[in-house]
Amino acid sequence: MSAVIAFTEIPLPDQSPFTMAFVRTVLEHRGVGYRPSEAEVRAALEVLRRYDAQCLDNPGECAWVPRLDEDSDASLRAKAFIMFQATKPTPAQWHKAHSALFGPLLCESCG
View 1 (cartoon, rainbow, N blue to C red):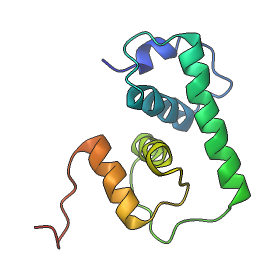
View 2 (view 1 turned 45 degrees about the vertical axis):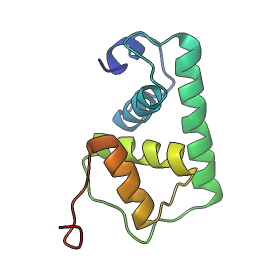
View 3 (view 1 turned 180 degrees about the vertical axis):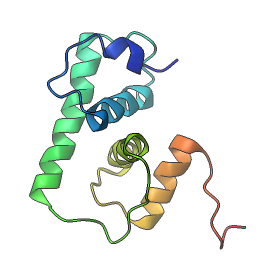
C-alpha cells in the first residue's frame, strides 16, 4: 500500500500536491511501507530540498518535458531525480524513469 496515507499524518512544511506526490514517490522508491517513520519522511523531504536547490542553481526547462497531470509530473520528476540526480532529464532518462514508475512506455519507434 502507498506510504501516502501514513505520511499525511506527519506535518509537512508544504502540503501542495507536488510536495505530497514527490515525497510519496521517494518513500515508495526506498521501499517504505504503509507507516513511514518521521525520520524516513524527513529524509524524503531532504531529497525534495536538494531537488529544489538544484532547480534554483540551474534554472530553465528541459528541451522536452512529458505532459502529465500534476501528481504524475511530480512523481516522474522525483523518480528521475532519484535515478539520475537530474532536474532536467534527457528524453531517454524521462523514458527510463517513466518505465520504472508506470511500466513500459511504447513509442512509435518501439512498436
